[in-house]
Image 1 (cartoon, helix red, strand yellow):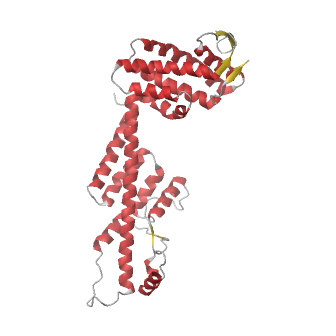
Image 2 (tube, rainbow, N blue to C red):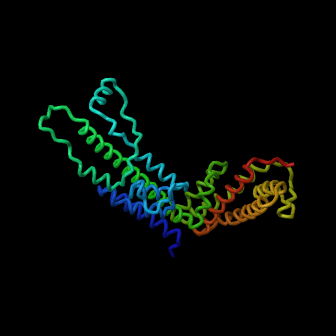
Image 3 (cartoon, rainbow, N blue to C red):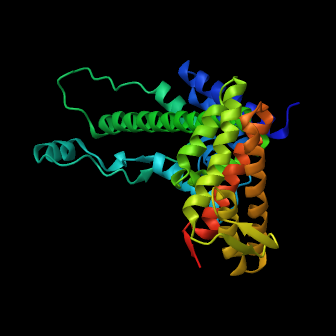
Length: 341
C-alpha cells in the first residue's frame, strides 16, 4: 500500500527527472519553468516558488505578488532572482570608452543592473537579434551597434545562468527524492528517526550503527540477524563506556529495584547511567530519559534474539530504535561517562 509519503517522494522523483530530461533535450527554458515551479511547490520551498514566478512573469509582473514584498520567502526569491539577473548597463558603454579601458587593461564593466524581464521575453529577444550590418566592413562600429551586441550577449549570459541554476535545483530535488526512496525502502516510514539522529554516527558506537544499517541492505536473513546483534552490541558498548564503577550493585530509581553491575552486566550499567541523569533532571527531560531507559532494555532483549532467525521487519525496527536511543542520549547527556560513586 502506497502511503502519502511514498506518493510525494515518487512524484518529486518523476517530476524533477522529467524537467532534467527536457532541459537535456534542449527545450526552451520558458516552456520548462511551469513544470519546475510545480516541482518546487510540491517540494515545499516557497522561496524558490516565488523565484520561479519571477522568472516566468518577470520581476515586476508576477500576478498577485504582494507589494512591497515583506514576506521572508518572497524576499529570498527576489534576492535569488536579482543575483542571477545581474548584467552590465550597456547604455553607459561607448566605443571610445571600450577602447580606452582596453588600452588600460581595465576589468570588465560592473554588472550592477538587474534584467527584470521574463525568461520568455529574453528568449524572444535573443532569437530576434540580428548583428548590425554595415556597407563598409572596415568602418568603425557605432555606439548603438556596440550596445545592441553587448545587450544580446548579456541577455544570453543571463539565460545560460538561469538555465544552469534550474538544472542544478531540479537535480538537487531529484537526488533528494531518490535518497528518500532508498530510505523508505530500507527503513520504512520511520526512517526520519535515523535521519534526525545521524549525529549518533559520530559517537563511540558509530561503527556498530553503520554495520547494522549495512546488514539491512541485503536479502540474506543471516545479515538481518547480524543487524539485530549489532544493535544489542550498541547497548553493551554504551554500558561499558558510560558508567564507570567498581560497585557490584546499583539502586535504580527508574527500575525501582537493585541492578547487578558485576560480571557482564553492561545493559544494567547503561540503565544506571540513564538513572543518574534521571535523578538530576525534571519535566520533559525526565520523561524522555524514562522512555530511553525502556528503549535500551527493549533493544537488548530483541537484539539478543539475533542469535537465531530474525525477520527483516524486526531488524529494521531495531535499527531505527537504536539510532533513536543513541541520538536521544547524545542530545540529553552528551554521552559523557559517569563515575559511580
